[in-house]
Image 1 (cartoon, rainbow, N blue to C red):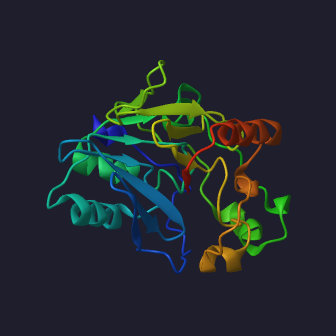
Image 2: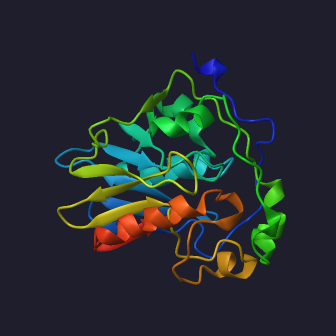
Length: 247
């Protein structure tokens, strides 16, 4: 089955990094963030067990780093119950095929994101005119073609629950991509936002490298529906989260 999984023809390693790359932070006892080059992945620890869930799948060619981070946190040969994708852009699915082959686990995403994850539709190419920053200018080199996870990708439950993530609900937060979701736990206000908004100005090479923290909207060069993106941020703000883990 997995022999049919594939990345787009434009899939490639992106030589970008930041001073946070390789660093892990325990945000809460059950939420552990690890930075892969310039993006964050999140490990959720299932209560009263050694089980865990991976949220997003990092940059291209980062599978070994993700597996190492998982085993550092959860022990040798640790294997998640599932991978949850906030969306399917290259820096959130960069290692997903290698991870699925290694772990043999299902992947979940919103129904509107599935065409981009089953090889049917490519994302629009990045827009280098979206900002004057150097990352925006170099964004046309970023992969935009669909990943094919047919046989392993599943739709998130329609009731808003998140598989194996007790207490979390997924919230549709489109704009950056059609099926973008954020994950929220009402009991303590924990919010995993993907790229609905970010805390580093993603268009600036200097700020990406230094990880200078400031609230920004989603990365401009890949965001095509700004009206929806704005409404999504308002929806998240209305939740009054206690903390936010961004992509």
